Length: 183
Image (tube, rainbow, N blue to C red; front, side, top):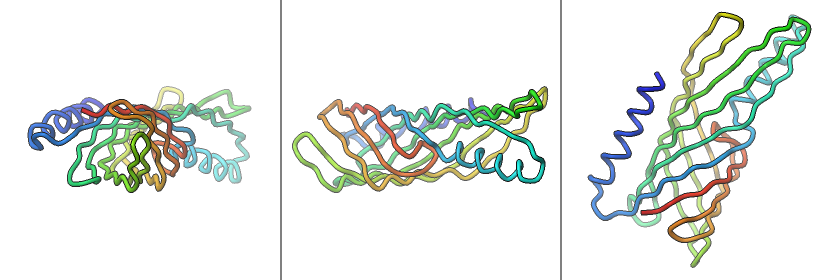
């Protein structure tokens, strides 16, 4: 499953620049806090605890996102992002833990709505699929779920190489910080 996801991303990255000619491309890497995958696991723990008296503790580290986009027309960009996040749910009293891993593929659109010399502001919207794997004891379970990222406000500072931050909600997180390179 992961191999297929990475191969699809590689095909997009290689095919799009050839098809677009001289349009500008960009690659980005970011870290995001509080992805919705952690929220979902946290709320499912609370609901399960109401019925089973199980006391769980969720530990997650956030999400890493790698993306590629190209300028379609004007200040509108089209691209895709691959997101990885994981968390661990410790079941207190039972001595067991649940390990959750998420790989997501999000086609997205980005609109730069204010461009200054070194600073630009943008919005990003993405929707796709998340492939999850949960392991507890010797058993594992896989599933595919809807994934999204809505970032109404983002800011980039720089030129060819820029730092950026986004505020929003979704698979990549609620607050993202990263770096991008345009070529």
